[in-house]
Length: 177
Image (cartoon, rainbow, N blue to C red; front, side):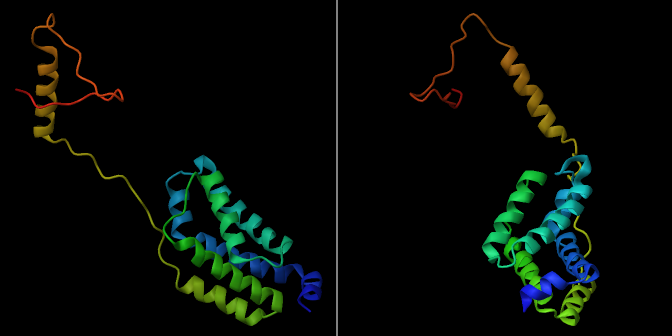
């Protein structure tokens, strides 16, 4: 019956699943951080919107997906489009939620799917924002840097010996005498 339902599903009903994919992906902190911090380039938000479309299409083109397949697909999209490797453990959760919604869509459980989307929208956490900490000038470190520069440029340059190296070619750093 689910195959017949898929073929006869009205486009507005298909749009409900697309809305579900949008809510899941756009509330995913990993994708939020990637977009907000320019990991996808200047068109990061457009890539995130495009990702919604290709993920929902992936489900419709492959009605018998396993969760690991969805995880692999989304991980590949994140890597290729946002240069991001998802290793925080959230990818299986996101994919499980998408699988659940698609199952509801396939079964024609319109009320359950709509309820799932609405509950996700209500529980939506505020967008995560990562910013680089402000760099503060540390007078002590500046003095140390200047002292090191002075030490390296001062002294007798005629007796300069190359630093010792080990058999792998690494420079050995030794304590001064």
